[in-house]
Image (spheres, rainbow, N blue to C red):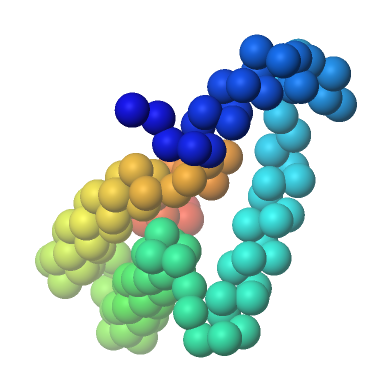
Length: 138
């Protein structure tokens, strides 16, 4: 049993009312959709609301920045103690904690990627090795 709306749409299709629409046979422009979504999000935020997947993205960004900040602080502390990070048990421990945090963040990114409405909003994971390398280049 179809709803009245579905019956009207089916009748319009049979009558060819959708045959001459602008853009027929062309791919949809996702740029316009992204702009509309940004506008919708801005309206939500301005009124104290947000979409769950956007909140998750913001939380991931905050958690990454916090983990990076803590790791940088530990490195600075070690350098003040005149310990070479490469040979320090404290640095090894800090780096392992950071790797665990990055694994957890990457799991959150996987969850985020499943929630986003469009593939263009998906993001790649973090590389703990790349971040450690950035802090202590060879």
